[in-house]
Image (tube, rainbow, N blue to C red; front, side, top):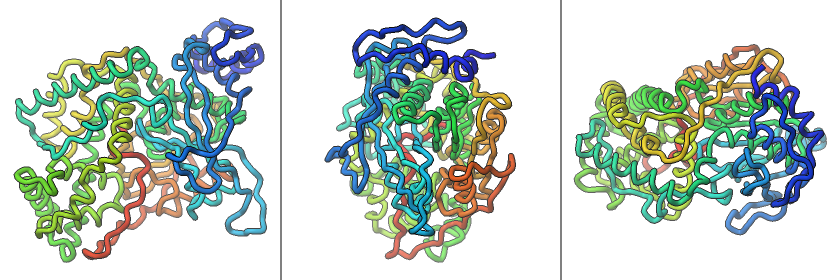
Length: 552
């Protein structure tokens, strides 16, 4: 039996029965026993979880900066910076909660029993789930809000939870910027220098603590949060990157799991974490980009950008060339244009606004493009923090090629067939080639029959951010899991979106413990309708900030 399985199946009960919680900063009355097969981090997690269980979370009003409405309450939970030293330096994670309403939204007079806490992570790395409990106000979530306390949190490094920073936020937004699909040697040298400087900034601003921001610690933090909430077993929903450290949790702590939903699953195969996964993501975005262009071409009567995908591409390239010569509003260059259309690859309900902005720009009105693609200076600090966490977690998680010649070879080859996102994705991750903190060895996500309660995996067939193959791989590795596929669809993050079939499967699982067959499918939701110039669609909030895109 692997050490992780030993800990979760037999070790935890014995450990928790023999530990005495220590006051913060004090020495333990009884040290964690040196049980064979348990790592120092496993013993440290048990110590921290028992301490958190005893302390609980003192929820009170959220800060004015958080501006939480209604019954939202906030608190903090302490976790070790280093789980191998559970009585050493502690950091505090900010947690938010809305209590279960106990009401059935379909029958206001009917009470429903509380089923505990539902903890949510939106992905990233670098995404904050602090505002998650507010989803209970939305119709699609009201049944869950009746039965569960909705719990969100800021993971380590994010927001107010021991925040990370790698550069001055005032210098974070680079704009207007270029976005060459086939960069010159001079441009590559410039970006290599920037990547080295960024990695150096992360090390200088955080010091030795930087090594402790990684996915294994995210999974351990989740177990401490579970204990602090008073939950014997965890009910969890993770989206995108949240599925990856959720899968680590399921492998490390299978006996602590009640129910888990993996929405838009990252491929957990250790051989692809994270360098290979990012290459696969870039390839998948090329198909999604073509799908978007085909949709625009199908509505040429509205947008006038061309009646074929190739003609729409020419319109896009014409706009990029014009923006390179004269940035729109002094802020939007080819890089910002590419970023705006990249986010549309995540969410197809962004398509009408993006198409309208491109159309309006080419007809002489740059304002819609400036509105959707221009940097929001007020969000610079949050965006810089999100990028810092994204970089630290992915760079710490696994080995990366340290020779730029490898990156150059692989991305040059891929860009010949998938030019849209390839080099942009490479520059995003290139600091990992020059990272100054030690690397983790990726955990082999895997559970055997009977080790883990049944879990639910959701995936859209044409999701580019987390390609569908990742969901199949996770399904293969988590024994007893069920996979629900949204066919012929590509939106990223599908739980409680526009597909009633998908939502019904999630409700049945989380509210009643019922799962479909090992493989089930739902017809895809309709693509959006085009909008006229004066009736642009309001974009819904995304599951995670695109600046901290999930590596898949």
